[in-house]
Each structure stands twice: as structure tokens, then as C-alpha cells.
Length: 200
Image (cartoon, rainbow, N blue to C red):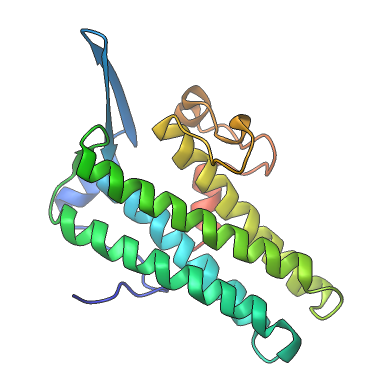
């Protein structure tokens, strides 16, 4: 099983391109049962964005021995996310959509979201703990990556109708805002802008 490259951009076939045009999430309710259907390509993009954020911010810390513990924390979170993304991608195969209501898929999706949050937390810790070690320019870039990842995590949570257990319930963007491509109320970034920042 090959590990997904942290820097590689996800490439899609013509079917994948068609999937990219689908809504990231559809929510239907029938006989009192709500079903959430997710675009596989979109979920992979979120995972890859997290790997890219970890790789880039981690590279900012290299060469600074005092920041080694923060770099190690990012690397640990990155490794966990890479494993979760590889497992999800392998299980999804050529599927275009999956159902979050299915217990197996829910476990895989929740694992991805948890590991994305861990990457975000590790990056936040590195930024907070860097003090004056990093230049103002590098620190600003790191914060941009942090905000981009935070935007995508919020969108991801909004699609699933959940919020990070350690964050306020309002941290997840409402689905209505996601559908209109509205900017995140805290970071000011749209999902498209955040994906672009993170190279996806």
C-alpha cells in the first residue's frame, strides 16, 4: 500500500472531473431518516490539504533546534493523517460518492477529520511557541496556512453536521454558507481560497 505524497496534487480521470462538479455533500431526509452523501474527491482534497499544510509549516521550522519539539508534533500528526487518507482512498477505490451514515465510512471519515484537527492543533502550537525565532514574514505565511486549514476543517465539519469536540459548536460553517461559497466568518477565506493556498 503506497503512502500518498504530501506534496502531490490529486489527479482525476474524466469520471473524477465529473465528480468534482457534484455538490460536496447532499443531505436528504426520508421517513425521518437523514442521509448524508459525500463526494469522495472532495474528502481526498481535504486530506491532501492537511498534508500540504503540515509539510510546508514543518519546513519553516527546520534548522531551528529550539523548534524541534513543534516540528516533531507536526510530523506525528502528519503521519497519522497520511495513514488515514491512504486507508480512506484505498477503501474508496473508484467510487465517486460514499454515504456517511454507513458505519464503516463514518469511522474512516471521522478518523480523517480527527487527524486534520491534530495537524491544525500542531501547527497552532508551533506558531504560538515560536516566539521571535521565526521571521515576521515566515510567521505570517504559517498563519495563512493555519487559517486555510482551519477553514477547510470548518467546512468539513459543516458538511457532516458536526463540530470539533474541543471547539465551540459554532466553529463549523453552516451548510447554507458552504453552498454559497461564503467566506469563513473568522478566517475570511472561502473553501476555494483555502484549497488554493494549500496547493490543492
